[in-house]
Length: 497
Figure 1 (tube, rainbow, N blue to C red):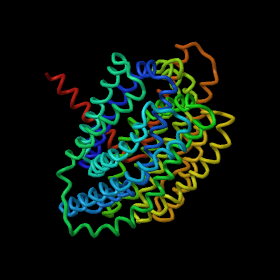
Figure 2: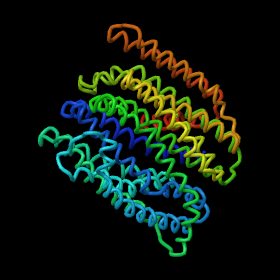
Figure 3: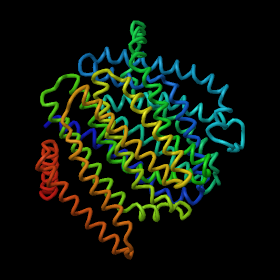
Figure 4: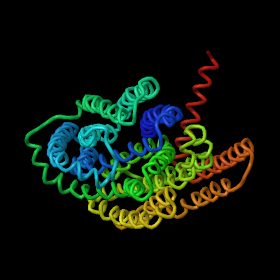
């Protein structure tokens, strides 16, 4: 039971952070989309494209090696773990400085290649993605080790500080100071610099340095080097759709697409805390050969998948209402891509669970191989679908390529270390949810009739979800029982007062 309490505590801090930041950010969208046009959203998205492209090389994959070190040493030898983490940070800093130089030299032709004929108000904006990439390399290291160490309370402080610094300043700037999109980009950079230093301060007690540990370079490169093509393939998978939309359609289409992706990504405010709580725990149990690990993997996978399906159904059913309430009328078209793009996020997170077997067996070479195959498929489908279907073609290309990488990763992970996930049985509720979401959208009802119908569907699905998991999932049963007991104890305590 103490393990479940620990996992629930981690889930609480991650959920609290996501809930506050995502929900408040959502309710700020009417203001943001009033002052920023689809073109402005497109510019922000395209700057992110350049930044993520550069980040493929800056860290040389060393951030991923820090997770492997934590899983191996944290519960065995903490001092050893700290020395390894300090050495990894040293190498990440060196690599980031090194790659900043050629990036600065070639940033203009790279910007022309990725951004097309976008006009900047000043030549200095060419270098904003480089500065942001350097900062995010350090910040990414700090936030990742907090996740892998399961210090989620500290991660809560880090993410809340970033949120508090950025969102109010952005709103004040847009409303009162007449900020343009270029001012917003500079504000993001300033806030991220502050957060980078705060992240390092939060992790300082887990970073020490030993010259002797510099010898890990060879082992770390053997593990991390496959991550470089993996990160590049990830960039293709996640960002190439925006490059093609900008080239083939317009920057405004990129902005509308980006808005739809942001709405769909709200799914992660509950799903991501679960996955980031479960994955380190599964990895540590695999490494320590914990008893009942196979049964736990099956139950944890089923629990995560079915919870994801419930979230998918809820967001898909109400995507039109969410977009109409939260976004300016110029962005309303994006609601139709939300259910499509949402599937790609679910498939991606499920693939992340199968990736744990690659790490466990130290077969990280499969990361870039599987993702490069999916990225090639994504490029072909974007080229074929975007000219005919605009943003719908881009979202469909992303989803189908993520489904492809899910199945191929599942197959390889099973060859490396077999677990009975009941994958195909878990897909049945997803198929039903997709049919329900799209069938409901085809029918025409009055607004309140629609709301009532969708609410009834969700309540019925929730009841079925609870019944099936209570019957077939031991971990859900234990968590549910613990939650009920704590709720009853809380009520009894308040009644006695």
